[in-house]
Image 1 (cartoon, rainbow, N blue to C red):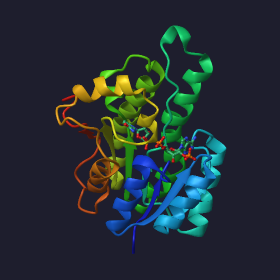
Image 2: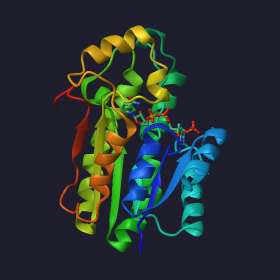
Image 3: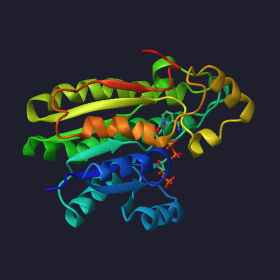
Image 4: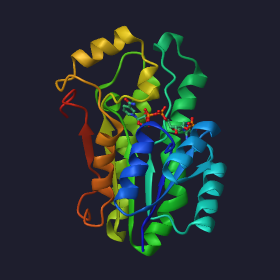
Length: 240
Ligand code: NDP
């Protein structure tokens, strides 16, 4: 039986790459998204993968959204916590709302999805959770105290939950992507991006499928002895 995988924020960018890689690996893939219905519709038309709309930062909505997926498709074997946002600004200009929204979605989303799916994985003694962190959670980044804190938190969350899942065949790992050519990075001013690229030894931005390969590795049937790990995929930008 194909494993059922839910990829949050799966309808575009890195998430779409992850959906395609897991589909290619033989999983039955479901994408989640937050609000962009048009992008979600285009994604489903392109890939044939169903897209479920719920805000992963909203606890009740996530529990209900995952229950709908279980009813429609079946028990969730794999969760990829990929949904994320930025609300950048230097600390003295950053609002409490900008702090909270990033923590709520980027870090709270991981907790909410795990609450929905981890108990079933534990009962069935098989599961894969992959959390998408960031190089900026490892190294910090000017103007991103909220984002860096949330992403850094994801790495701690991963190691803690990995210890809880280990005895039950549930692995929990993280990927720390560097700069990838998605809509999120398109929002970075060209001059800033140019400076960032100069610091990437490989000399370019990464692509979604290069992150997806790492996720597919962690989600494989054979990946039974790797848990609590963080895989950096960043073109050599930060060797951690
Ligand atoms: P994009 O902005 O291109 O896509 C974000 C996805 O997340 C969309 O599908 C979006 O849905 C979804 N999303 C946003 N908010 C919510 C929410 N509240 N509930 C559910 N879904 C939501 O992002 P990327 O592909 O660039 O990034 C994906 C992940 O990788 C993020 O966690 C990001 O922090 C991380 N990352 C990205 C890097 C990069 O360089 N791009 C570098 C390091 C980490 P909708 O379309 O409906 O808005």
